[in-house]
Length: 121
Image 1 (tube, rainbow, N blue to C red):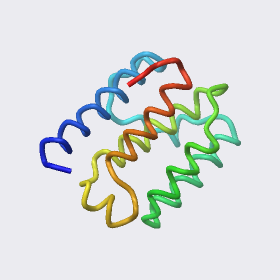
Image 2: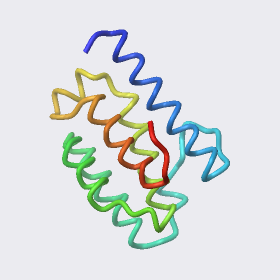
Image 3: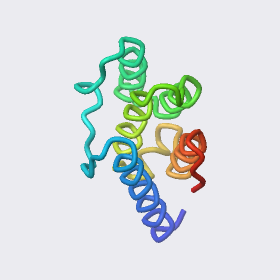
Image 4: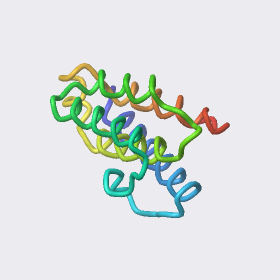
């Protein structure tokens, strides 16, 4: 991926997560402190599982778990997903690729999440 394409992809992901935060949580902040805001125990397990995988640099496995266990029935799942999309979007594509993931996959996973709410990227 060229530098231009990578920059475009990062902006697209950032813009979409910002729009979703505003739409669903009325927050403009790039940082949703998901862990502190979660109330549901099931969602806390979801968050901690993804967090642990990311801390172990298992980005692809973390995002696969995020997508496979995502539900649009509980907005805490969306809050969690947005926090991790922002976190991984801030990483260089080369770092993501070194750990079996990429900006293209991040964009694709974000697209899957937005489709759950009837939003097409």
